Image: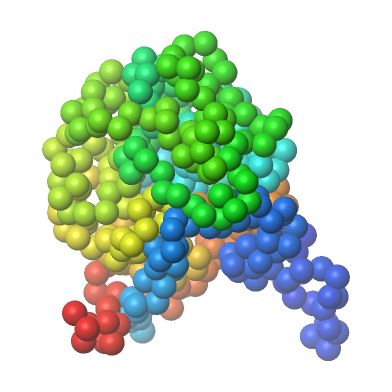
Length: 396
């Protein structure tokens, strides 16, 4: 079951009766964003929705999916479709999960706690950011049935880094995600224009409140020295990193949990990650919020999958808005795909229920796309089910 959308207007019982114009019709993930834009303060909406510099990569994440086409097969038995899949011992109702992203509390009082509960009810993994507005332990206590992954940055203060990861291990998290593409954040000009240079009170990055978890250098995420918040918070991050640091984090803090490295965009880095001992790699350009001018994530996926060669699972996020997008990613070799911005917008629209409804909506789209493609299970979705646009191929 993929949940319900009972609180939203999706159809009328009498086809001759026009739907009420007072209730927004939410039919897809983009509708959540359109609705959120109307109800959130403009600076907050633009903080969530904007990208770096000219936003080429932000928009390319979505447009790139349009250059890949599905190759449906017909006359195949699809009466009983199963979208279920397994990932590092976690059973997913569909091959989608919530990517870790910070400060959910900006759009809903329950923040990450609401998101985690919705993931548990749907049946998928919830990524919890180091920069969450609910603590590592609070999220675990609130959503005991949810499979949680903790996302880590490597701080200049290495002891604080290890302490944070160990807290997640002790709290029962099922995986660790190391974000590798954020030694520096990209500059989002919308934040500069809006004066978004600090986390607005009363919100805090509460994981740093615990003794031993706060960076010891005296650098805070709300220094307000720069005109954009991300440029203030990035001062806490270690910039002199190597693949030895990945091995170090896994050895010193992860215990028996899988370590997934997020932010891989090239075959070369995928090989380095595997050689460093990671258990999974995640293709991601940080939702177009890191380096502007790089490929859309779906276009980087094939070379990473080829380089990894099946040795570890390959995940991806960036631009996923439709069930057909999920199927395209699966056909190109992804084990599952993550959602970022749609989670914030659904949470803004209707809290925990909104996130659950959004996941259910996408799950049903995945099921329908698989059926029309002639695939009864996720494992049947192979490379022969997707092709590059003829127009794109002619330009290569």
